[in-house]
Image (cartoon, rainbow, N blue to C red; front, side, top):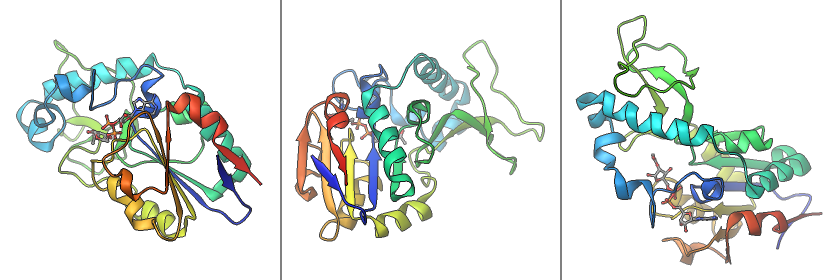
Length: 234
Ligand code: OAD
């Protein structure tokens, strides 16, 4: 149980494990996406330059899977926590699905981007909502400027989104909870190290993450079972 007092500020970091029980595959481990796809071929600026149709095929597949998914009790518990403590909760997700929002979370920093958003790879046009799929024989979509429309995703080798806000929230937090993330992908893997010693740090998931030694306590189990009972708010 994590007890949240009236002065606490909570930082929650979620990873693919939070959406696993909704039917969205994780990246690593049995059945993980990176067992069947190579990062360098589908999720990097090089891949986009070399074969944008293949990149869109990968993200179209992920759009289809995510469009069919519904939030699970872990997403609901986090939305409920926001209702109780408002902006004393900072939600940061590495997930690109919108299941936190579907569950009712209103403020979520998507540090790796959003699956249902696209943008031009050339001009400064704002990223825009896009639920379309672009699979062969569809052509790679084009912007009016002549650039290509790409997924609004942080690929390997790119800088994650919202880092200023995220680091400001890390500095303020007194409780840090990571859920369903393997703890090996930077910069998210280092967040707990930045707050340990001054914030209480917790991990939730069925396996120990790579950075488990830095956490004060690990709650072993699936997020959908652990989260609904995890937080008590004073
Ligand atoms: P991973 O696939 O690396 O790790 C998923 C974690 O979820 C593992 O530690 C599992 O033990 C755990 N897990 C599985 N089922 C769970 C459940 N029901 N409840 C709780 N935990 C569960 O996914 P991430 O750590 O999120 O980046 O990966 C981080 C980043 O690496 C992703 O955002 C993605 C990926 O490459 C990009 O694509 C930029």
